[in-house]
Length: 268
Image (tube, rainbow, N blue to C red; front, side):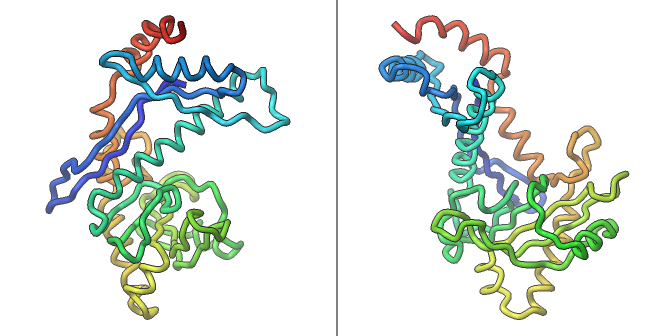
């Protein structure tokens, strides 16, 4: 898998968003166990030493034992997963230039390596893809009955593995951003680290007030670009950050053609 990855942070000054930090790199990822180590080292060195066009090798993990090792899609999925993990590292780097600033995150808090949350600014994460079920039956009824700009009650979610580095407990709730044809679309989930949530707003009245204010701000910040594919569940600041980072990337056709031009000389 050939990719260009990176992270970006934007600063909001009044109504103006400016790019505060960005970082990017070009990477190649594949499962390396099938090749002799000296060849892997040669490829990694060759990639890193391409003049004006260095790439970094990301070794991908071997698939599970029951996987079909002759299926190219299985190997591609392993390389893609490795690349996505490295993307989360860049997002963590982009998060830390100003650790005391209140920060809006695209994706869950647990996907970033963050310093102790008590020592940093407020983190507010907005999750667009719902891969886990956090609701009981009545919670689902409440969720599906939400009207525009309404939310569910907030609740606590603990990390699945209670060990250092496995994530933090969060206060979370679902918020209906916009009306869509399906009752389960147009909905995002919001997270705030539980430690920050309870220390800054210790009483239930204060917590409800904070959740209401943040929910109102998120609704006001929703994306209005009809041309944007994920407009019903996207926020304008996050869309602007994506566009800012994409503007720095090399067009993929150029990226691929340059790689192919150098590929034959990577191993001597």
